[in-house]
Image: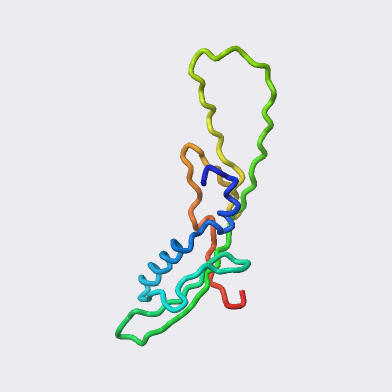
Length: 144
């Protein structure tokens, strides 16, 4: 996917997150904080915002049990503007090549901007910016 910029708009809009993976991470985070997913569990938000809602209950047997719910909204920090693809020039056929044909050097993928910082992706060693550069995750209220 990283080498196919045509798929970036959906990914950068937060549409590439899978519910099982996100909810597994929510369960790990809850466990680190002495809780477990419960009640309504973990579900993808529907509507205009991408994100997840999670309900957790404390697991400490010696303390009073508490349950809480939260919505985490994923907000993109990046935009992608695909560079214009030049139209190849028509050329006269040349002589047949005599040796092995060399592959053209891959051009960097440009057009990714995150919080004003421009990123170029090297197709030979493709790596996107970190998740912290790509998205903000914030808790939201019931009215959002």
